[in-house]
Image (cartoon, rainbow, N blue to C red; front, side, top):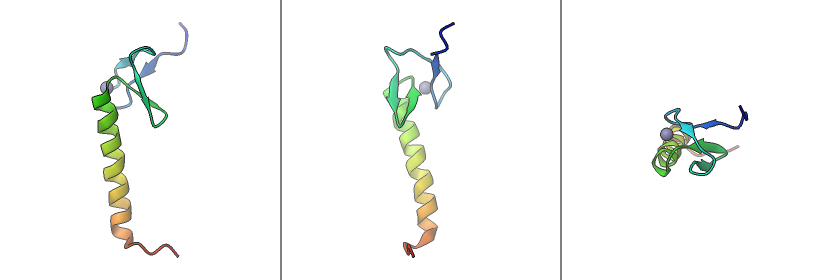
Length: 57
Ligand SMILES: [Zn+2]
């Protein structure tokens, strides 16, 4: 037990340090899942700012 085992943030699969992808401070099992996560984040922030209209003050 090294306590350094990471899990894919999207599918929960074990991620090895050598083969895992680290993006946005999270680990992913593959580029695909990293991409998926990025899209999820983008969709979320789009939803947030979509309603705001763009006024900042
Ligand atoms: Zn994954």
